[in-house]
Length: 89
Image (spheres, rainbow, N blue to C red):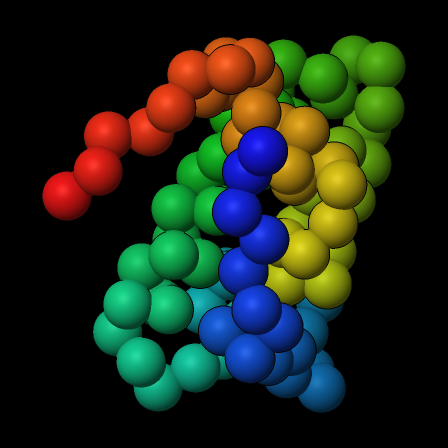
């Protein structure tokens, strides 16, 4: 199973829109959280490229609720592969 990040990692700004950068939609002063948001945005963009012909709103759905959703987890899982473990540091 993929990790589910705690909601305190991301807090949604009140002026967010689906077309803005992840740094404006999921705001946190912690640099690690900013990097996670950038990576999550890249994952959603790649999945959108693969799925937008079937679902033109894929990127919006993937990034909804600051990436705390099943669409994002399914997308991430597609790139990681089923049953593969991530390297540990």
